[in-house]
Amino acid sequence: MKIGLLTSGGDCPGLNAVIRGAVLKGVISHDAEFVGFRWGWRGVVEGDFMPLVRHDVRGLSKQGGTILGSSRTNPYEGAGGGPEAIQRTLDENGIDAIIAIGGEGTLTAARRLHDEGGINIVGVPKTIDNDLAATDYSFGFDTAVEIATEAIDRLRTTAESHGRCMVLEVMGRHVGWIALHSGMAGGAHAILIPEQPQSIEQICEWVESVRDRGRAPLVVVAEGFHLDTMEEAHSHKGLDAFNRPRLGGIAEQLAPMIEARTGIESRDTVLGHIQRGGAPSAYDRVLATRLGMAAVEAAYDGAWGSMVALRGTDIEVVSIAEATGGLNTVPQERYDEARILFG
Ligand SMILES: Nc1ncnc2c1ncn2[C@@H]1O[C@H](COP(=O)(O)OP(=O)(O)OP(=O)(O)O)[C@@H](O)[C@H]1O
Ligand SMILES: O=P(O)(O)OC[C@H]1O[C@](O)(CO)[C@@H](O)[C@@H]1O
Ligand SMILES: [Mg+2]
Image (cartoon, rainbow, N blue to C red; front, side, top):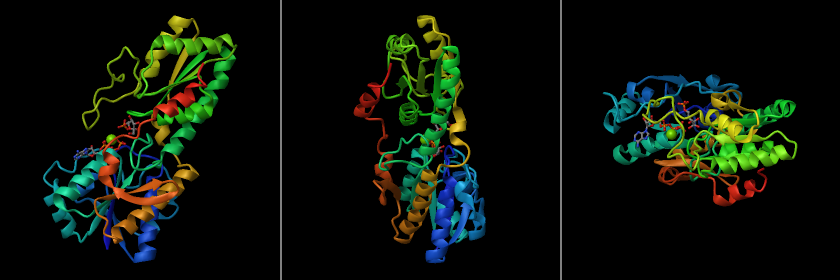
C-alpha cells in the first residue's frame, strides 16, 4: 500500500513522532510505501508531496514541529479541491490512502472526504488544547503543560521578590485543560478557564486572600476565558485563515483591573506559541509514536473514516464522528476539585 501522510491545523509537539511511528511500522510490518503531503491539505489539493522513506524519519521523535509543514487550507477549495479531484490526484500518483493528523477541523474535513467521496482516510488526533472528544489525551498537551508549569515556577520567584500579582495567559481556545493542569501543578491561586466565567470581584477576592497571607498571587488564565460581564473571549488581533477571531490578550486586560481594585502591583505574561514549540515530552513521544503505528494498522484493516485514540492505556480505533461530535471540556467536578486550592 502507498500511504500519504499530512499534518494540518496548528502544529503541536509530537507530529514528527507520529510520522516516524507510521513510517517505521508500515515499512517493517507491511513493506508499505509512504509520501508526505506538504502544508496539510494544500499538498493534497495541489498534488505537492515528497517521498518518505525510513531514512527520512531517523531521529524524528524528539523533533518539534512537523517536517511536512502545516496550514489551515480547506480541502474543498481550489481547482484540485473536493472529493472527486482529490481522488483523481491520488489515483494519478498511485496513492491508496491518506493518514490525516490534525485537530477537529482537519478531522471533520477527513470525515467529509470519506463520507462524501469514499476516500480512504484514517485520522490521528492532535491538539495541545486537549479539546478533542473520543481520546483521553491528545499528544502535545503534556508538553504544553510542562512548559506552562515551568513558566509558573519561574514567575513565582520574581513575583515573591516584588510582592506582585502575576497573571499568566496560556492557550486554550474553547477548553481550559492546559490552564487547569499547569495551574494545579504550579500551585496557582486562581485558574480561569473558558468553561467557567467568573466575576472580577471573585478573582480579586482570591488575589487579596493570597496577599493577606503574605504571598504573591499567581493567576493562570486560558486565552478563551471571559469574565461574566463579557459576551465572548477577548480578541483584538483580527481573524485567522479560517475566519475565526485570533485570541490572546485577556491577561493584559485582567492585570490592570486586578491592580486597580486591589492595589497590588500586577504584571501579565502571555506564553503564546512557546507552548507549541520545541521537543515533545517523553509521554507525548510515546503516545504519538503509538498513534502513528496504530493508524497504519487501521489502514491495513481497511478502517476508513476512523480515527485512532487513546482509551485508558490502549490505542483504539473509533469513528471520526465520535471525535468531532463534541468538545472535551473540563468537567464541573474537575474545576470544583481545583477550586478548593484557590485563594
Ligand atoms: N467542516 C469542514 N469541512 C471541510 N473542511 C473543514 C471543515 N472544518 C475545517 N475544515 C478545514 O480543516 C482545516 C483545519 O482546521 P483547523 O484550522 O480548525 O485546524 P485543526 O485541525 O482543528 O487544528 P487546531 O487544533 O489547530 O484548530 C481548516 O482550515 C479548514 O480548511
Ligand atoms: O497558531 P495560530 O493559528 O495562531 O492558532 C492559535 C490557536 O491554536 C491552538 O494553539 C490550538 O488549537 C489554540 O490554543 C490557539 O488558539
Ligand atoms: Mg480547529
